[in-house]
Image (cartoon, rainbow, N blue to C red):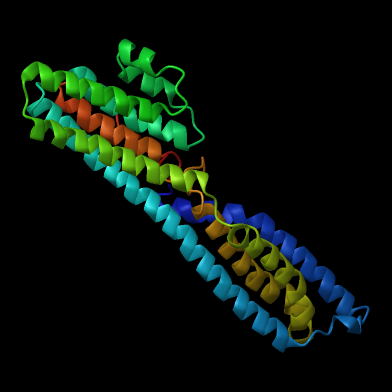
Length: 291
């Protein structure tokens, strides 16, 4: 996630410059054909293109709102994972006698979750936090975050029986594991359910077609200034499409994705400090991007 606005602007410009150059090149071709070779077939009326542009802008706005809703829901669910993980660690320390293997397993959980959701290998973080017994128990699991929750549930039950803890308190702790499973299910739903093709592929196709046709209409009015005006308007539509494409997949390895590594490390830090261990240093932004 981009956290430095100045560097973020440079990232956006770098991602858009190739598109801008392509648009400008096409606009130059159109204006030269029209101005020097008098290709009258290029005289497309302005009104149809204006109506198409307005409809396209409205369509892309709806699509981008949908994409941002996916991104924000992912961030909200990660917030729930953070809160429930902290609460679980606190209750393990105050009710279950502070079993360190359970707290460390909970610290490993968000790393396993980001490994299951994203495209970056976090297995080293999971391995260094899990006890050898728990690591052996979840080895080979297709869904390792769910396997860790199962091991945590078994450990809580074992400790509750050992300490003679009241069933209501036991249920309260176990309910946090259920809440974590619910949040994980929401994140997996976002990860495994892409936007329909009408929202993901169609806007890009229509934006490209619009940018190709746009200078054919603008050249009558703008003349030699067509590459300036048409390229900027076309770039606006391309950037709108790219914005939606960046936000619709919040777990990818890109500057616009959620900072899952930083969030997982924050959870790890809070939990390890609760049992008196020294955590790894927090994740720092790299070139203005928080991973």
